[in-house]
Image (cartoon, rainbow, N blue to C red):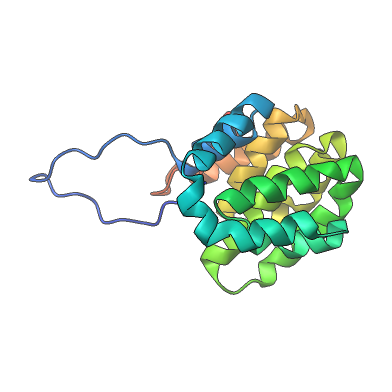
Length: 192
């Protein structure tokens, strides 16, 4: 999954127009939309499996051998490429009861000093809450204020997919705040 788009300088008029690519939030939405979409993302990663296995194999094995939810959640920062699919599958095995521990990790993610690592952890945790239903929606509502703008955008996507209408006013405020910003994070609230 792609990370947030970093702020780039505006192209000069002499350069070719920028290609249209989906925002990171749109790609995130596709990956958590439903099981079929998730399978497509996982299948795309597995197409490059031999090459990715060299990089991700040890993490996949660690994730698969983790015995408890806490052990699986400890490996969230390692969930890249093939390991991301393995991590999500393992988290989902713990069912709805996983929502509170995931929410605790999401709240604690604010203490991760590296922005890219923090984004990765939040992407995985917010995506995992997508599959915990109303408990996931409740957890995201409680964590929302403590997330940065990118995390809030991802949370809006998941809250929309979970049909949580109680946060509609907050999403509208988020859209208004983010519309004038150079990045496309407001798209998350539009998807929501």
